[in-house]
Amino acid sequence: MDSLSAPVVYPTGSVSVSFAEPRVDSSQARPKPHEPARNANVQVERDVDVLVIGAGPTGSTAAKYAARGGAEVLLIEKRSEIGTPVRCGEGVAKRWLDEIGLTPSAEFICHEVDGARVIAPDGTALVVDETRAGNECGYVLERDLFDRYLAKEAAKAGAEILIKTSAVGLLRDDGQIIGARCEHMAETFDVRATVVIGADGFESQVGRWAGLETHLRTRDVDACLQYTMVGVAGDPRYNDVYLGSCAPGGYAWVFWKQPDVANVGIGVNLSKIRDRAEAKRYLDVLIGRTPSLAKGEIIEEVAGAVSVSMPLEKTIAPGLILAGDAARLIDPLTGGGILNGCLSGKYAGEVAVDAVSTGKATEEALSPYERRWRARLEEELARHYLIKERLIRLDDETVNRAIHAILEAKVERITAATVLDAIRQHEPGLLALFEGFL
Image (cartoon, rainbow, N blue to C red):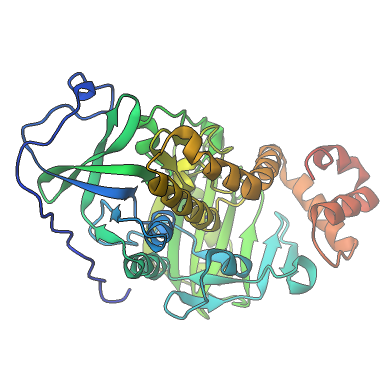
C-alpha cells in the first residue's frame, strides 16, 4: 500500500509582474462554493499554460510530459520538502518502469526482491516468483528520493516548481476553470492556466472544488500504519504479505529495504474497525506474535489512509484534469497507486499539451485523457474492486483453503484462470465464491 539525502533545491519561481490588484472576472464577483472571492490581499497574478497541483509521482510526471511537449508549466507543492513525509509501503513491480520512461536507478531504489510470499492465516506461505507470476519480482523504493527524482526530471524538462505553495480555490470564467488562487510564503496570487491538473492525492480538494463526485463509502477506505524497523529477521529475497483476520478487509506487509531493515505495515478496511487507531493494535499484535519481527526496533512510524474504490465516474471538467490518487486510480486490491499515478500523469501532461496547442481546453478537448486511462487501467481496476469486495467477506478458513488449493495444484504461473482451475480441482466447494470475478 502504496525515506534521506540532502534536500533538493528547486526554482523559487519569482514572479515578474506588477503588484496590481488582480483581474477578477465578473463571474467571480459572487463566487460559487470553493471559488475565491475578490480579495484585496491578492498581490500578484501570472499566466502559464499548465498548472499542476501536487508534486507527488503523478504531478511530477504530468509536469514533465507537459513541459517536454513545449508547454509553460508551473508545479506547486504545499509541503516544504517534496517526498516527505513518506506514506507508502514503497514496494513496486519492475515491469512498469519502461512504460513510464524510467530506468532503474540506485538513486531511488534501495532493494531488489525476487518475489513475494503470500502468507495464509494458518502460516502457509505461497511463494510468488518469476516462475509462477511472470516478471512480478520487484523493487523497494526510497520513496522520498523517488519523488524528488521525478521532480528533478520535471524541472530538467522545463517545469518550474514552487514548494510551500498551496492552491486555495479554483478560478472560473463562465464555467471554464482557468486557474487557481495560490498561497506561498504569506503571499496570495492567482495563477491563470489553460489547463489545471489536479494531482493532490487521495484527499483531493481540487476535485471537490470542480464539482466532481468524489464521495467515498467507509468500505472504500483502508486505514494504514507502517513502521520502519531495524534488527528484524527473515528472507530479504521475498516481501511478505499477510492475509486474513490479522488485517481485516486488507493485508499486512513486510517490504525489505536492507537485510535487517524493513517496512512493516498494515491496511485495514474502515468498515471492519471502530476507528483508525485500531490499525495500530492489529499491527502490534501481528508483530508481537511473529518472532522474526518482534525482535526488531521501530525507528519510524507513518500513518494515513488510502482509497480502495472504483475510479471516479468523471475525471475531467472544462479546463481541468484529475490524475492519480485524486482520480481514485489506486488499485483497490493492493492499495498501490504509484504506477497508475505515473501513467495517468503522463497521459494528463500529453493531453494538456494538445489542449494548449489548440488554445481549447473544453471537456471535449480533454476527453482523450479519460479514454486513454480507461483503456489502459479501467478493466483491471474494476476486476480488482470486485475481488476486494469479496475478500472483505472471507473468513480465515476460506483463505486457508484457497491458498492450499493453489499449492496442491502446483500452479506454474498464477493467473485468474489458473487460480480458478486450482480451486475447481481441489476445493470445488469454494468455486461459487471466486467464479464471478476471476
